[in-house]
Length: 306
Image (cartoon, rainbow, N blue to C red; front, side, top):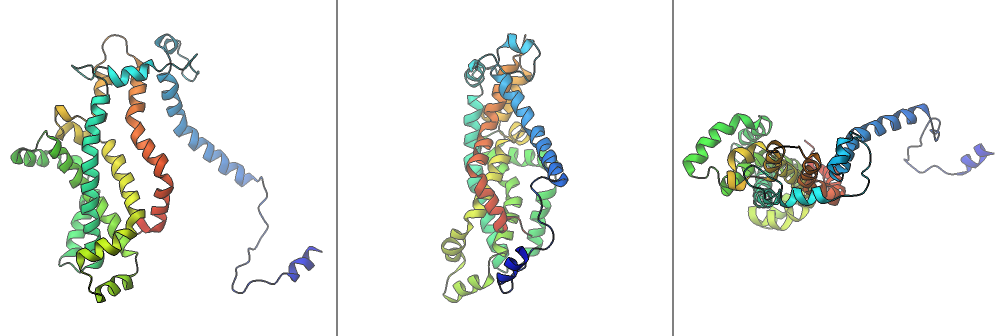
């Protein structure tokens, strides 16, 4: 009966019909896949769970040693103290000072590095710039060489320029270290676009700037989202560059978090430390939750294709 019904349905021209037995609802392979996925999710979620519940416990509850136990009631005092009055060295103004410093570092660094990286990628993809292959190779070298190697030379250069230990200095450092990755991302994205689009615009008289602003930039939304997510996450989570180049008055949130953990005197307040850690991680988490769908679309549209 089923064979007759199947034969009565005409196959679409050129369509590939699936072969083999249809997978069952539950099989050994599916159980294995779910087991691996659940273990991977637990490996990520359990530390986060411990941090959240510990931050909402009182110190007597923490001393009981029940690491995975829920708090008797949600207590947000540790979060308030971490934000407003936790000691970050000699001062006790909470981690809010580091938050605003990170914001001041983050915004110009993200905007400048993405703007310059997109122009570099556009020029390397469509314009036959003399020596473009050599320049692209140098940028790739900068993307893969560990940046602690460049720390001391950059300290000397910024000191000579009078920018060491200042807000413009740390913005310049993040812009420099972000340029290689941004250039590679935008160059690969623009290289995936049809060259006929570029040639048609050139025939119509569009120049370098007009073609970039009127045609390429409006088509760059997916890669722009990917670039923003990568730069926000990388700059916000940075510790070494902020510690070395920002200066004491401009320490980012990660450095302030380290000072809270290491400058505790007397009883160690684990709930305050966990709350400060969660507050430090909120911005990257919010970026991922709000733009994760666009991040996947950007990757799928050619953002990371070579």
